[in-house]
Amino acid sequence: MASVFVTGGTGYLGRALIPALLERGHAVRVLARPSSAAKLPNRCTPVIGDPLVRETFAGHIEPADTFIQLVGTPHPAPWKGEQFRAVDRVSALASIAAAKEAGIRHFVYVSVAQPAPIMRDYLAVRAECEAALRASGMPATILRPWYILGPGHWWPSALIPFYRVMERITSTAVGARRLGLVTLRQMVAALVQAVEQPVDKGVQVLDVPKILKHE
Image 1 (tube, rainbow, N blue to C red):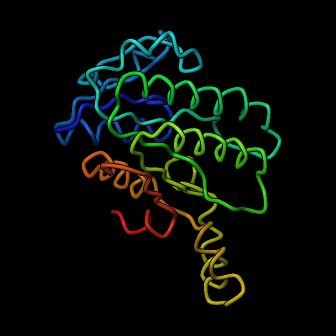
Image 2 (tube, rainbow, N blue to C red):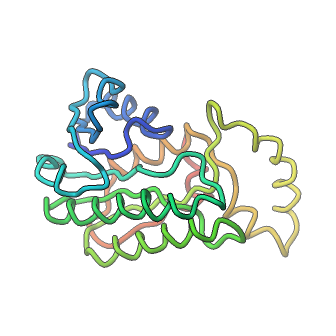
């Protein structure tokens, strides 16, 4: 069983992932601010700190062997560029540096599908963080969803027929698959598999078509 350190554990994805990891017998430590620690499942271990300040959690990552970075701006939108740089970028770079120092054997990062015609600031921040992760030399898995369907996030379901049409047109098929919709269940399954089947070296990327294979 893995020993996992999670940032962003009280967010949309973290709230679904942590119980799944615990149910499979993994030890889970979760970085949380004092005001959020009470929201965590009883069986995980809270680590009080600030994901934007490496010094507040760097010394508490061990004995984890796997690090999962989930911190991100809620409900990303094109006008949230400043938040992407202040939160998504700062937290990811802090986590990568801290995980490297702690000797983490596998880093899991939730990024975003690339390239894409919109959300330029969001994509730029995530691409910079991916580059920093590769430069760290840590074995890593990068997941690149576009939109995750789930509780409170179902409205894009109306676009599914449009996606089906685009996937059948030669000129738009590749883009439609790369920017397709995945479910929260599929994302959790892909993350659990990343924990249980870590890469030994290099970086593996799970794009939308690969995430869709998980249930």
